[in-house]
Image 1 (cartoon, rainbow, N blue to C red):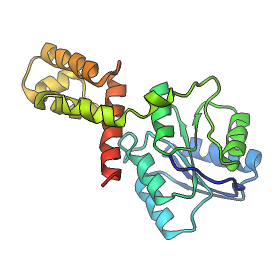
Image 2 (image 1 turned 45 degrees about the horizontal axis):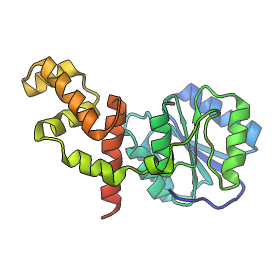
Image 3 (image 1 turned 30 degrees about the vertical axis):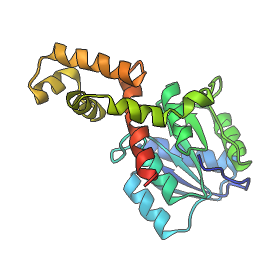
Image 4 (image 1 turned 90 degrees about the vertical axis):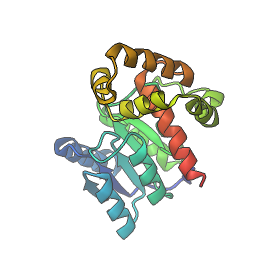
Length: 224
């Protein structure tokens, strides 16, 4: 996880595809944070173009659920393109698994979209000090459990070819019925495979299985 040194947050790039929320967040940051420069974009692709063209912002406020983002893919691309910027996730996704994964992969903080203005002010203050901002009441994962990447890769290797194909289709957002159709197998067979996949990966939900697979995949790419 990239550590950002303490510094004032004077410029922000918001990456958000809902215009009304984007406008509201822009106004909020100017009011509660005194941000003098706020740029906006609605996609990862345009965000990367802006970051490459410069100037780089002090902070990027990023939604995870964007049309051209695949899970943590967008976060990792932005983190790589703006290594010196604080990266705050603003998302309606608030499960502990997702929050932990975002922080593990370089986010400087995580704010639920429904948060009040004071929360954004607190988050700005925290990341300006070089710290990590987490939602109220959120308990970060145990350090030993927060970095399961090598173990996850070993577990992914334990999947059969069919199970790997099913996990890939789950990552595309497909339901069991759709997977059964694509692979020409019974839906009950898909359900059985999903149960085994989650057991092998040591997770309890389909979302956690997808995050674990993405984490291992991107960690492997980053190590090349």
